[in-house]
Amino acid sequence: MKIKLYQPKNGYCYNSDTMFLYDFVSKFNIKGNVLEVGGGCGVLGLLIKRDFPKINLNIIEKQEIMFEFILNNLKENNLQAEIFRGDFLEFDFNKKFDFIISNPPFYNGTLKSNNDIKRIARYEEFLPMSEFFTKVNKILKERGEFIFCYDAKRIDDIILKIPKPLKITDIRFFYPRINKDATLVLIRAKRHAKSEVKIHPPLIGFEGEDFSKEANKIYKKANTKSIKI
Image (tube, rainbow, N blue to C red; front, side, top):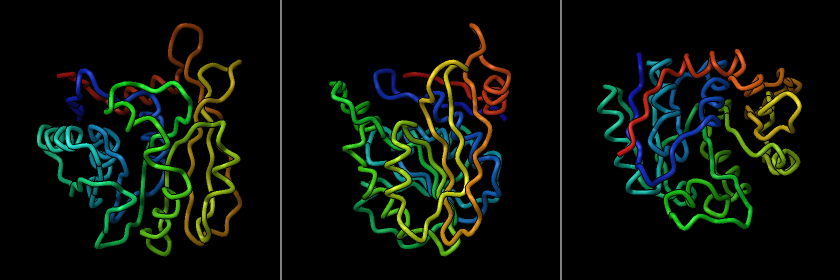
């Protein structure tokens, strides 16, 4: 089923990071209560709900305009979810989750956008890493899992700041091209895990001027149509 996604013309739009995170999340046995943190227009949650229809999807989004886009996109695609509007760090959830998934704001550079929608969606100051991880750990069930992506250059901070009993179990790096540095890291962590960390094969974005075979396959599997309004 193709997922039709309305997005703000002048706001933050989903990109390849979310597509690659969607593929990474899909490799695991997603079930139960699933929370997406920072839903944007809802793309990640909607794709996972489409592919894993038995999950109870929950999405939290702090920006009113994006909250409305999520509601509209759920209706457009005939999918069900419980939507919370608020700041993830301050929101009082009345339940715990089996899985938490997120493409959080992780840029910490000095070049900032004048567009508030883009700033909130992109920059870590709106969801600091330590506070983010701590809240995730608090609202996961005892064997709950946390699957997310982040700037690959922050891998040392991620390892240091993941709070116990969360333990990283899977890591995959994304490289724009085979001769370029990694720009994104995909991570799965699980509470009370005892297994060693699995380092997955690298994900390459482009081969020459075209998408790599794997990247192209991921986009085809996602099967989305973006409509900017």
